[in-house]
Structures are given as C-alpha cells and as structure tokens.
Length: 596
Image 1 (tube, rainbow, N blue to C red):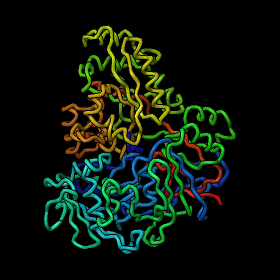
Image 2: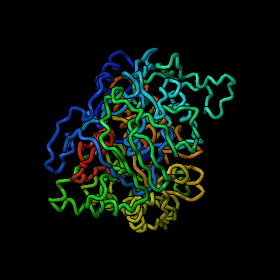
Image 3: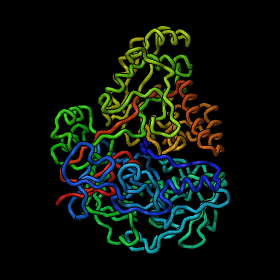
Image 4: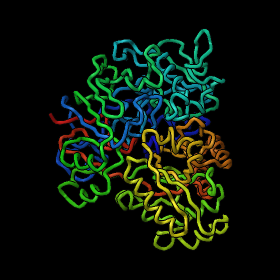
C-alpha cells in the first residue's frame, strides 16, 4: 500500500473467473482453511542475537505474558477506524483490537502472506462461479462490552466503509466489486425498513453472504480488509468513531488523545478459545505519535522504544550506524519487500499535461540520488519500472535510462523540453509527506537534478495523516495548487499483479472527494488491460498482462519509479517473539511480547 504499503511475496492464483482448478489452487495457497498458531510454525531461534534472525524465523520465541509494549510514530496515525485506513502498519496493528473475517497468518516469512480464517470459521465458500461468497462466523466472539458479534455487525461495517465522503482513505475494492445497485452509505439509506445493502445478506446471526457484480476468485483478500472488522451500529459515531473503536480483539482502548498518543489494555471480553491466531502477550500497549523520526531511531537503539510503528525501517543516519557496528547490526533485520517508492507525475497540471514535459522529468531524474535518499543499496534497488521483482509476472525494463552512471540523461531531457514547447524549462511544485525525511530528501534531490535542465521545483511538505485525503490525493487540490510531482510509495495489497497495480493505476478508482492512491494514472488503455486480466484464467497469460500494464504506464510517463524497497528494522533486546511477516513487510505486531 503506498498508503497501505503492505508488502507480500507468495504466489496465489487470483483470477476473476473461478474455475474449480483455480479455486483449488487459491485455497491451497491460502492454507486450505486451516488456521495457524501464534508463531505460525516457522523456525524458532533462541535469544542469541544475529543479523536477520527475525527473517524467516521467530527470534527469541516466548509465551510469557505481561509488560508494556512501547511503539512510536513519526507522524499521526493513519486512522484507528477500520473503515478509513490504508497504511500497512495500520493493517498490521489493527489486528490487536479488531478481527476481520480473514487475516494474514501471524507467521514468519512466506507463511505470513497466506490467508487464514479469523472472525470467520473458515475461508470463504464460493458459489455462482465465484460471484457469491459465504462466510460463517466463529461462535462466541464478543465485543468489549460482552455483546455477541453477529453477521449484521460485519455487514454494517462494510456498508459504512462504502461512504467515501465520511471515510475517504480506505480502499475501494468493496465499492468496485459488490453489486451495490445504487447503495452508497448507511448514513444516507432512505429505506424505511433499513434492510441495508442488498449485495450483502445475513440469513442468520452467524452467516454473511456477499454478492459481486462479476466473478472474483480472490475474494478472501477482500475479506481480510479492515472494513470487515465488525462495528455495532448503535455505537457508530461516523467520522468520530476513530476516537473509540469498539474492540473485537484481545485489546481495547484505554486512552486516546488524537494526534498525541493512545493506549491499549486487555479486553476482558476476548476469549482465547475463539481465537487461534493471537497470543496477546503484553498487558499494555502504548503508542506515541508525532515523534521526530531520527529521535525514534535513537530511542530504539537505546532501548527506550520497542518498535517504530511505520515499519519502513531506520532512517539513513541510523541505518549507516547500525550496519557499521556489529554490536548493533546483530539486532537488525533486512528484507526485500514488494514495495515501490515513487513519484507521481500529475498530467492535470500544465505543462505536465504534455507527455514530452513528463518525459523530460523522467530523463532528468538522478536515479542514484533517489536511491541515496533511502539509504543507498541497503534501502533498496534502483527501480526502472513499477512492479517489484518478487511480484509474479514482473519484468524489469527501463524506458527512461539515466545514462551510464544513472545520474540522468540531461541532453535527452532537454530534447524532450523542446518537443513540449518549454525549451528553457518550467516551474512546478513537488509534494512530500512532511514527517518522512526520506521523502524530503527525494524532493531535494529531484530539485537539484531537474534544475540542470531548467525545471524549477518548489517543495511543499504536507502532514502524512491527510496527505492522500486532502492534498496530493485530492485531484482538485493537487491541480489548483500546482502539485505537478507527488512523492509516495506503494506495497502490494496481496501478492499478485492485481493486488499491486489496481489501486494505483486504475483511473476508475479516483474519487473527487480525495483519499486516492492513484494520483496520476488516467490511461484508458490501462483500464482496458485491467479488465482483460480479470477475464484471463490462464496464469501465464494473465501475468503477461500485468507487465503490459506496467509498460503502458511507463510509456505514458505518469509515474517516476524510484526504489524497489528493502527495509532495515531494529529489535531492542527486550522484545520477544520477533519476526518479519511477509504479509506486511515488517515485524508482526500481533505476535510481539516484551521481557518484564
């Protein structure tokens, strides 16, 4: 998810039309409906620290309960509301207080990107050629007030997530695939009987049935979205619900000071007998917000903070310090993840509405500088196109080579400027998330690189909590404020070309109200290729289409790829049960414990 930035690596069969064979492959890839234990059956390692000890195995395994887990965030939290969240760290963290129908297994390595039942007793059961999906809830699961959770609570949760005016930041998969028949929101439902969305049926308290517009055999990936975390309608306060989300998981909110901090404590109504996926080791979880990113790193290294919650890794200064000191490096983990750090080139902002001006930006970019902003090779590989290499079907190509040294092709950029009628260059604004030093470094590097050909950048930082809601992700604001270049990043929502590409290249997911993850791709041929892929049941042929989409986006010069990400994360010595979950590309927050 740029936003969501979840990064996953396995290879399930996700197709639009579900033949029996395709479904069998999908269910096998997702674990066949069998849940996992808290450490997922991965190889456990003793508490002897070593570099990458938390990659592919559990470091310092423990079942000991108690203590306080301390997390820090360099900005504000994405959103605590399951209807309005789209950052990977949030989807990872939300499992502590919310239970979706399906979840990524809390397990190290590739097992962590498989799907297992959570609130549901099994993975979804398809019918009608995968246009209909049925789930049965586990018995006895309760909200924090002791009220039994029913299918109607899940239905209501999905209904409210459809309202992109109230909740602009969540993904649009349910909006795009459910047979809505004009339904938009429970807050605007004029039906006097209040039967709600017809596309979701609840024939009894334990059964929920989803009806799609078209077949989609990967619907279990939709079922793992936070939008299926149950919400009691009587306690829904709309946009203010984030102030106190009603818990269905092992922890509930004790305090919540929006923009400053919040604290979770044990939920007495949670029953471990209904939940095979969660160990719930800490007694208390404290999250501090709006802490300087470099300060967080220093506190991690000194043991004053346990986890940097964004999960995007150490900043360049701490990264160099850790990699250069064996006594620190042994407490770090590094892994390549299915995430792209990139810059959107906005075709709505003149003169970038001319493809040759966009190509001038592509050629003038200093690719090495972009990589250095993320810490050099330790932070990732120079990206030449969109899809990270571990996504099935990804092919590497370079439409805009940066010369022999990758510092940019200045003559070619100047030639493109002549072709777009701007031989002396032009001016535009470049946005970035203010709390992210690496994005600021990217913008400063591009400012210098593009100045070589006369392109003048004014740099503007925006708060990351509203970056996609109000600024870069709101088309009218971006155009009116001349945001020609917009830094961001994206990790796969799940491990295939659709899960990586759709939400950032499909023009039909762009909403005028904001909250968009597609900031610049409005190419009809791309939309047609996406539809073609969803009708292609042959795996090899479908993966070729994903690569074709990638190339079409690059040919239109609406995305400037920066870095295929690696992340260097640090585990203080008091953490237990530590491992990188490939489903999120960071430490699994559901499994962590602390030494008392």
